[in-house]
Structure formats: C-alpha cells, structure tokens
Length: 377
Figure 1 (cartoon, helix red, strand yellow):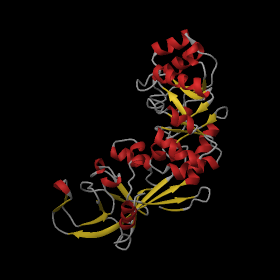
Figure 2: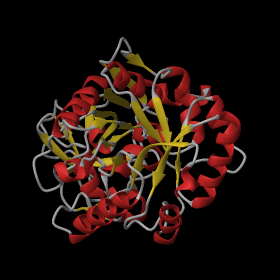
Figure 3: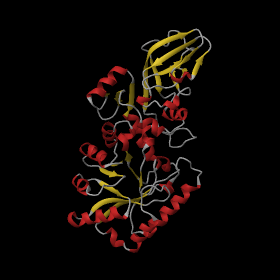
C-alpha cells in the first residue's frame, strides 16, 4: 500500500477485518460439495478486494493447487507466493505476451482461434504448453463461438502441441437455479465437449457447484463463496462470513428542532433526534445508493442511515440507543455477522461482489487466522 494510503488508513480509524480461517473453511465446504472434482480458487480482482497476497497463500496452505486470476499482472504478482501452483489467466494473453506466460509458468485461457493459433505457434519453439480452451455457451463475452468450435472439430490439428488442461465455459445464471438457461448451457457444454478430443472439463462457478453433480465435471472454480457471499440466494448461506467492518463515531449531535441532515437535505428531522456521524463514505466503497436506506449496528441496536452518504462520512439515527452506548470513539458495525455483505448489498440494490471489490484503501486491514499471517496493514 502506498505511504499516503497507509497514513490515511491510520487516521480514519475504520477497521476492516478479514478472516483467513473463514476463507479456508469456505474452501473446504465448497470442495466437499463436489467431492469428485478438483477445486480451484478464483482470486482475481485482488481476491475480490480482500488482498490476494494474503488470501492466496492461506488457500494454498489449505491444499488449493489451482488458482484463477483475470489478468497477467495479477498472475505475475502471485507467482512468487505460489511456486508450485497452477495459475490460470481468464483473459488470456495480449499479442506478444506469450513469452511472459511461458517464462513464469502461467496458463492462459484461450478464448478465440487467434489466441489458439498464437499459443500453437509458441509450442513449436518451446514444446507442449498448457492452456484452457474456453467455449461460450451463453454469456456472449469471451470464448469460442460455435463457428470457431466447428473449425477445431473439423481440424483437430489446430490443437497440436497444446496441452489442454480443461475445456471450460461459464454459467450466466447459476445463482438462479430455476432458470432454463442453466440446463441449456449444460447441454451445449456437454455436446461441445463430446465433439472434441478427450479432455477434462470445468463449468461450475460458486453457485454452479450447488446446482448439483451434473455441473461439476473435473474442476470447479469457486470465487465469491470463498469470501462469504451466499452462493444459494434465497436459502441459508452455506458458507461463513469473512469480512467485518467497523467505523468510529466522530461526533454525536442532538437535534431538538426541525432540521435537515446531509447533502441535498434529503432527510428531515421533525422530532428530537440523535445523529451519529461515522468515518466511512463512498470514497471507501460504502455506496451512495445506501443513502437513507443502509443500516449499521451498535450491539443489537440498529442505526438507520439518514441523509446522503457523502465521500467521507455517513450519518446514522441513534435516537433509540441508550445514552451510554454510542459516543465519540464508539466503533459501529458497518458489515458484521448480524448484517453481512449480502445484506449490505441488498440495501444498496447491488450484488455482494461490488461491495467486496469496492472496499477502500483507507481502511486499516486486519487479517486474522491463516498460516502465521495475523496482523494489520
């Protein structure tokens, strides 16, 4: 973390706690759901905002041997920490970057015929090289088209020299198990795989794992579930919470006459009210959409967000709390077991992924558990 950001994190007093033991428990829990498959860990986007440098070694110590990231830079940062692991890059390589993949023993996901041809060309000089082959079954983002797949089926020599570790695709609505698209993607995937030379396969993300054994194949790729996000929305969360966020009360203001609160005067006080202002804001990833709808907690007491979330501050209605429970310096729970990241996301009308990946640099980060990594950054 840059020096200025470190100084900022010390001055705000807001503490983000990340439980590495909970992450490894979640890994084991998800792995137990697919006992016949190998279990990777998706640590892209800095382990969903929680710190890949801390998270990935904890997962490796728990037995994970396969990791997925989005970009080459993420893979290069992890390679020294995971010397024996298979590190796969979802976005593949930019033209000319093949050498960095080979030099650092990284595995590209080949998303189109051009990438396959470039990787095949590299094998002529270096011998067989590992890769994943990605077929688009319904996301319409990355992956081979039906036409490109057909060309490979018609000419298997296109795969010559490439060691395909897994044939893969990605589910679009796995968190909605009743959607027909899940079965349609599964059928497309199985059909495509049957047309290719024998190779292992990977389809299921976090929620896909809970769709059942038909979706597991030889490798599952959990991401969000490792970090406490519920992979089965609408049901009890099968994984443990990982993050908690506490912010200090900066000031407690008692209002005894009609007055507005915050920018835009979007909240009006019409009766005696106590307003607690805490040190968190949208610059820290506490989304502006939580204005007048978010919730924090002091013990068992709920403190509704009143007024707009601003860049550095949030105002809470503390009127129902005993006088001695909230005062300047009191730590208020912003994310907690009582109000986990999925609940915060629901309040913000977004998904937990956005909440996690947006957690700001000004927090003091406290890691607990893991292989001797307890500490703060």
